[in-house]
Length: 402
Image (cartoon, rainbow, N blue to C red; front, side, top):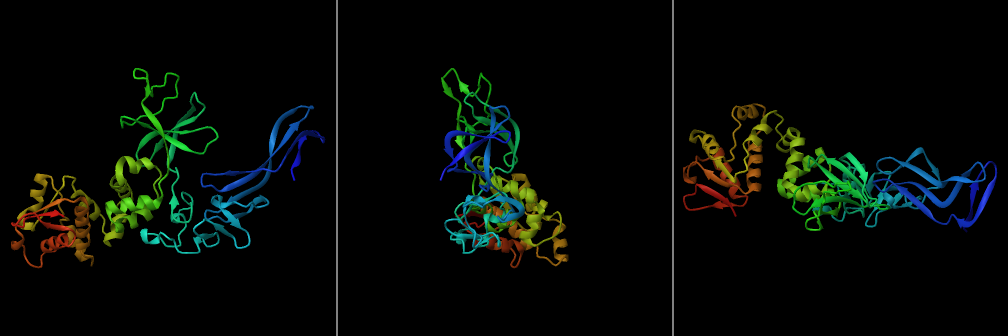
């Protein structure tokens, strides 16, 4: 039953003629966690017979641990129907209904296998939010959704239409973006110019975003839809290989800005992450814990579409540098790897995997028939032939990807 809304004064209660209290409003954070609930009952503060202002009737307040458990001593009122991530909560079992699966706040895991597990082998089939509940939520128990955790606000204001416009610096694209929130809306938009040039929104009255000569806008507001870690993962895994992604995803974490993928591509974003993860990722992939190997391998990788392989006596490194091609050369580090009990082939294979993914044309310094049996060069060529390469012509000195 609706209750009559009181107006609070000095030990007096004034009542208006309206009845309120039936509606409940949930106040949530960026993860959808319901932090507080209020009713539509307005409580007025009055000291002189006139209401000066109103305060809301707070029904409940909750604070959560990262994986959803209510913090002791940080809960007020009756726990509502919807709590962590805005999902329906079962008080008896302490579980949350995510639609496709049931989530246990005590375990921090789902109670059943991810129906998409076969597509994302880098995750446990019971994982929640990619193991990062501070940045991600599981919208339906099938995959996590990213948020704007790595935006650094540079400036903000309100435009002539009452919309909040902020300029934010994104660490991934290393650019400042204009983002906009409409009044009474949780949706976020970013400004995108039609000429594909990067630009920002102008809040001034002159508004340089409008082309007065042609009587049209220079761009449009595009709704920002954060990518899920699994979606980004598939793109980066395609660009860099599943093993590489599985390592640097655990080191670098999720990616916030959709523009990082849509504008620059999975390979560019992946390169940025791998650069940040650096030698740690390389050492985990190859199993070679020797500093400096990673830098030598990466230095030998070029973006010219060509790679050169050869015996040392063929001076293949000099030839590759002359034509700007990729080449693999560890110098004295080769012997250092062997002395450590590790296999240099693991570093070599890392290099070849990059060549394969780039689709480089591979030039040999001698015909295949003249390569020494049991040599590393012979092993390199056979590896390429086993991974989608074929001979360009009968001379068998050039390999191309099929």
